[in-house]
Length: 187
Figure (cartoon, helix red, strand yellow):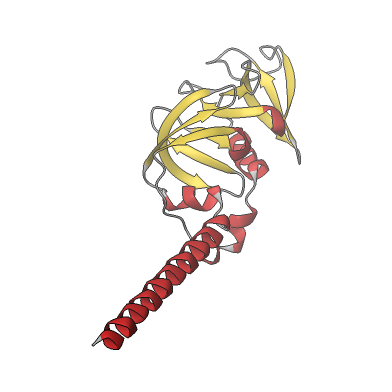
């Protein structure tokens, strides 16, 4: 009986050690998998859902995730806002879910901020470009390069003709906190 208890005790210790090993391996694998998750794929998982975020120089923004590009996201709500991911400081209650990188199309992975800004320029809608230093530029984007956007500055509600354009501001992509569509279009 004594040996039986001894072997049972040893068997229990081995099982406890094996459980501890398995739990450690699961923890290591979970950490390794989490280390591969990108913020852009977590946001892609939230398309159609509302998120709250804080943007450098732009403050808090809340909206429904409409589209997520390679380095930007489009939020809908009271106004449409394009936010470069590099300007995002925090996201509230994002949740752990994400989209697998293999589940994202090649084209979607390549649609950078320049693509989004070119679409806005084609739309010819006035915007407020919030800059990371807290200032802003108001006008109509009319030319988009590889890393900049030219904004024809004019009063909201004015069609950007030569006689109403006060000047053009060239804004580096790295300075952009958010680009908000202004509800006032051309009547």
